[in-house]
Amino acid sequence: MTTTRFAPSPTGYIHVGNLRTALMNYLIARKSGGTFILRIDDTDPERSKEDYVDGIKQDLEWLGLTWDKVERQSLRLDRYAEAADKLRDMGRFYEAFETPTELDLKRKKQLNMGKPPVYDRAALALSDAEKDALRAERGAGVWRFKLDQERINWADGILGDISIDAASVSDPVLIRGDGQVLYTLASVVDDTEMGVTHVVRGSDHVTNTATQIQIIRALGGTVPEFAHHSLLTGPQGESLSKRLGTLSLRDLRAAGVQPMALLSLMARLGSSDPVELRADMAELIEGFDISRFGSAPTKFDEQDLYPLTAHHLQSLPYSDVEAQVTALGVPEHLGLHFWSVARDNITTLHDLEGWWTLFRDGADPVIEDEDREFVAQALEMLPDGPYDGDTWGIWTAAVKEATGRKGRGLFMPLRKALTGQSHGPDMSQVMPLLQVIRAKG
Ligand code: GLU
Image (tube, rainbow, N blue to C red; front, side):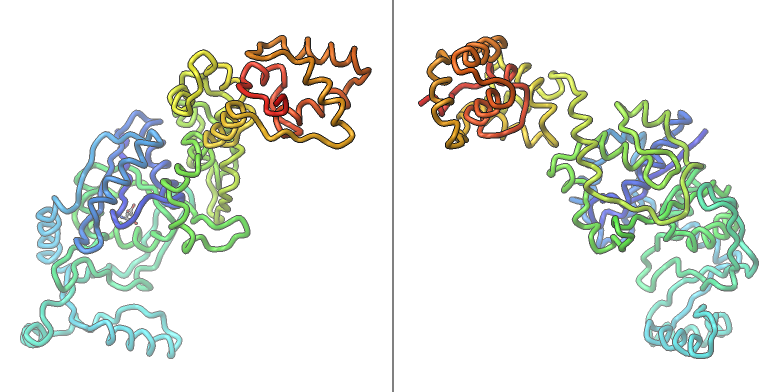
């Protein structure tokens, strides 16, 4: 039975970067009929905020990424303490007392000597008396996991075969001096106890994975399948890290991006399959294959979301947007027709308002000097509304007859006089929507 999890820290909102992680884990679980856990990584009481927990849930709900279970790390601290005791008993856990400044100095020295800046395990040599003295002087130390200095190998679902020399990695700190359990340990305990079978996360976690594999083995757990997706960059390959704050799901939602547009893009970006707009979640699940993703950084361009959004909107039945349309004040009998006219001429639903304002209040007429007489004559021939689907055809035929104008020279000045624009929906469709024709006076 497949079990995956999305494990955000509630220290911010979901952005396009971590959306990829959420989506991939979700799709793997759903494709195999497994379980998808939303795990809130809130062991840091200072940075974790309840508002972000709520925000993360709202964002996932907006996208339709439903979870089967919510877990919270802050409610599982006893489990982590138990695992820590186990590691201590096994001799795989040791207390270290270096201050950040001392560690920094050590790293600088190592780098100067051309050595990798790996923690030198000086704390392992401390006697009990020395530890007591340090504890008395500096308070409790941090707890580090003693890595076995061997190669750590795994077959990564995206990166392929990975082999990391544990000797090139510092023994990870799993518990801070103030007793706070760090993510590396908490995550391993959870993944093991919750039966997580597949872990997909960003490639910034590759080194974590190496150390976590050893911790899982030490605790007697089963190592899940790992896959690390590449990180997103901007369209030019530039780092997105500073911009991610402005690429939050809530900002995109406010800008009018549609969930299926965002999901369709994210389910394919960075894979060897083309981006295709999917109609619904079932299609998205069906078309997802993690083995198609590559390790190269993935370029993300926010602008790609808008054509997909427009395309998605074109496919929506009126019932899906009725609430938004009526909220604009479109009379009930015109709602369906308004949608069928407007939907091909919008990028986001926000654009509906502009169209309705135009139809309701009429446009400032645009009339070229050379057309002034022609337009005046034509407008005199236009009866008062309301109009229907035949009005435009009958009217322009009569105007053609009376003025001898035809084609573009006939239609364009009339379109511009009525809508103030030189392009837009089919005029015979527009006429029944026009509540006011300002050019008519
Ligand atoms: N809370 C971690 C993060 O957001 C989870 C990483 C993981 O998937 O293990 O980076």
